[in-house]
Amino acid sequence: REMQRLAETPVSPRMLERSKQQLKGSIVLGLESSSSRMQRLGRVELTFGREVPIAEVVDEIEDVTAEDVRAVAEALFAPERLSTVTILPEDE
Image (cartoon, rainbow, N blue to C red; front, side):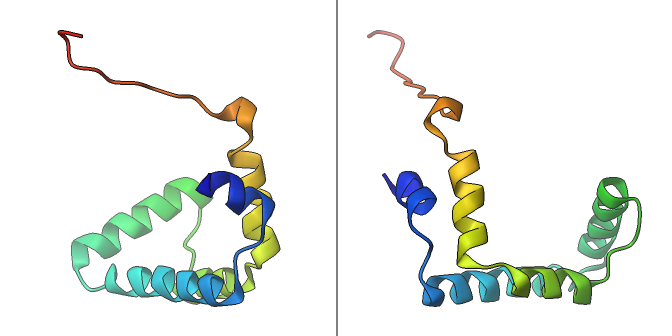
């Protein structure tokens, strides 16, 4: 139900802002250790083929709108793309 709601209704401005702040905070905290920094640089280089400065990432996060979130959720959570898995104990 929550995924469907996200796909149908844009998130509130408050929730969008909280999410952006949390994401930016996680990125900054990830820069505290050398190994995390190196992993980020390697991942970004493999993904984008170039260094992506943190300032650019933060700017892109700030540019995200509630409608952007809704549109991505609509594409990702389309009923035809979802699966259901049920895990039961072996004896059942």
